[in-house]
Image (cartoon, rainbow, N blue to C red; front, side, top):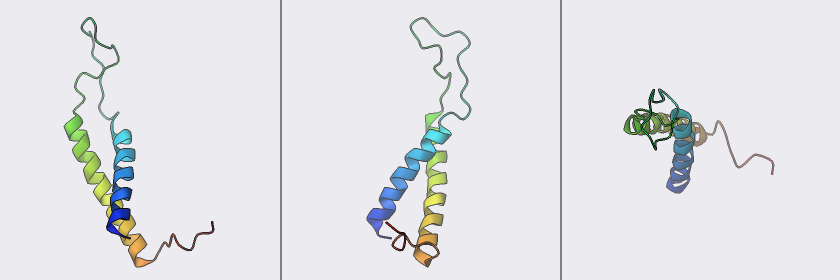
Length: 80
């Protein structure tokens, strides 16, 4: 797989994992201030979620690259 293909796979996988990680540990505010959304999280901890997402994505893309590079799965042989 080329670097471009690996990069595209990384970006797509990163966003999919990010949307799966986003709801982890979300707690709504008990008493929101006037003008604030009642369902908004109290402390979203986005930097932690970005770090976790990046770590999970690196592992997944590395596994996919290894499986593809060794020939266990060939995307060229799939019927159109």
